[in-house]
Structures are given as C-alpha cells and as structure tokens.
Image (cartoon, rainbow, N blue to C red):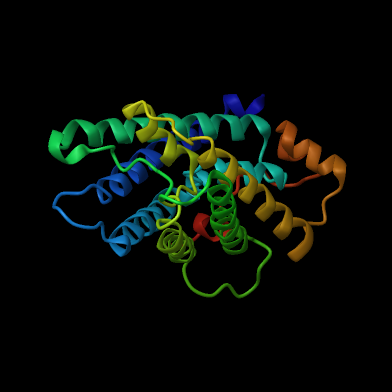
Length: 263
C-alpha cells in the first residue's frame, strides 16, 4: 500500500481522470450530428485518434495515458502494474469519461445531443459478430501500444503518440460500420449512463477486455517475451516497492522515452 502514500501515484490517477475526460469530450463531440445526412466516418476516426495522440503526448510521462480500462487491464495481465494501481486507474477513467460526457451534454443544444454518440450495433450485426469485431479492434490497438511503449526496443522509429493515435484511428475506420468502434469501455459507458440506454452494452466491455487480454498475452509471452519469474510478476501485482522486487523499477505501462524527451 506504499503507493497510496506516493504523490506521483495520485498525480497519475488524476492524469487518467483528466485525460479520459478530455478524450470523451472531444471524441463524442466530434461524433454528434449537427446537420442532416450521414456521419463522416473519417472525421470521427481522426477526432478520436488525434485526441488520444494529444493526450499521450500530454500525460504519457505521468500515467502512461491509458485512458481506457481495457488498456489498463492489458498492462495488469502483463504484470506491468500493481492491482491497486490498475483498479484506481479504471475508476478514474470511468469517472473522467462520465464527467466529460456530462460537460458535453450540458454545452450541446438539445436538438443536437441525440443519443450522445452512444455505441450501437449496425442493423444486421449480431451480438456475437459485434463481440468478435470489438475483440479484433482492441487486440490490434493493444499490440500497437505494447510495441511502441516497450522500453526494451532499440532504435524506435517515429512518434509513440502518433503511432497509438493512428492505431485507434484504424480501429474506428473499420469498426464504426459494425459496432460504432467502442474499443474503450469508458467511452461506451459514459453516453450509456447519461442516456440510460444499456442495450447490448455488455458487448463493449466483453469484447475490448478479451481483446486487450489477448493482446497482452500475445505480445508479452509470445512475440517479445518478458523474462520475469513468477515471483517477480507477483511482486509487481502486489505493488511491492522497487527495492523489494529484486531491484526492478516500478512499472506503470508508461512509455519510457516520454520521461526524458518530447515525442
């Protein structure tokens, strides 16, 4: 429980709240229909992708800029953060998402609000198909995050923030036609709770969580295994101090280069 007495821990929690608030505010705001006609998928995809890229740049060195309970779950599965930190991150993300959606709701004209960009299944897409789509969308997203955040890589090319943002944009360009591209339980939860519409809402939790977990296992145990013993992994999950975990540094799912240089 030493983390609870750490100022950096609470700064990271606030960063996740703050970042998710802004992510939902700008992402959902760009998804509202201000004029008749079809919604421009490219506009929405770029809005979510650019919002996340901006937030990775802004708070990545503070909390890792997960901004997504599924991403936090992936880092937990990979034993890259403590259980306590993961739970606090998820709570902060959900509260931040609801706060962001509430602010958007309050500043948007009634005629434009609609369902506040609530994720819904496309007609003809079954819940099973939707769940599989969400699994694949989140799987590729988490793989990109793990690969770009990985401190073991030598000679990184390009920007972490843009790589993660483009991966999210890719998911939206495909997924919006099927499920509205959830990929983030907090993003899906916020409009659902404000509009009190939870139809098929479980899809937007089960799919991303499974996809994130598979992405973590695939990267950390198969593609680029982390050579940690079971005792080291348990030590990290328990939140042991770095000195108590065989000298291993505290891991938060934070891209290392963000600590020392701008992207």
